[in-house]
Length: 282
Image (cartoon, rainbow, N blue to C red; front, side, top):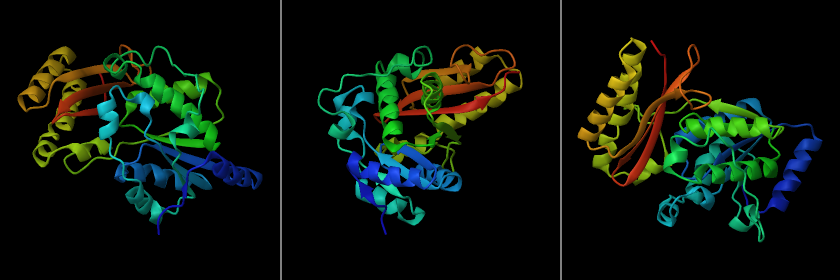
């Protein structure tokens, strides 16, 4: 049995209003579809801590930097609904573009500072699109809790900042990245890798985990990251757009005693891969 698909905001409103009247809590898992086990881990977390669960499926055009990338993004709605069936989610909300951005829509949500480095530097406007659609979806679903994976670490920190700054009545629930046996973080974009490239992709998490371990043992960070970058490019992963250590919360320079994160973005087989791991500064 597949998850029930809802396409209109009016139908969704009828459901959420009835749940709120009954005093039930609502969890939302925002996605762009092409669901995999990483998404299912978010669904399981939502099922465990809220009374009702909505999974949203909307390929947001405003967060893509090229029409070609938007067109290539996997669209597997029926398979997604079937995959969600055993989890008995209460709704799969699949709005058309006009429901999210009706005619005359002219508001953009922008989060300064945290959106500037890394992804922001390489994908101008991307995070404005993310912040805008997340704000809309949180309001549409009336969620009490929203579940986001740590794989998109910068996005997660941006959403947390957005919710705090706008005083949105929703709790952001971070969930650990889900990895394949070779430790590659699961991603919808992985579906676009050729079999040969998929094997090569394991070099990315290997480099990140090895670098994090070396740095935690006191090896010079700049030297370690230079070696990791060279290793990735030698293995055919490139160009490496960034490979940096940042403060885990602000994405700025690491602060003494504060959690840090090692983040990377690379190209492989025409597919852009991102990943991150925690790092303890020695």
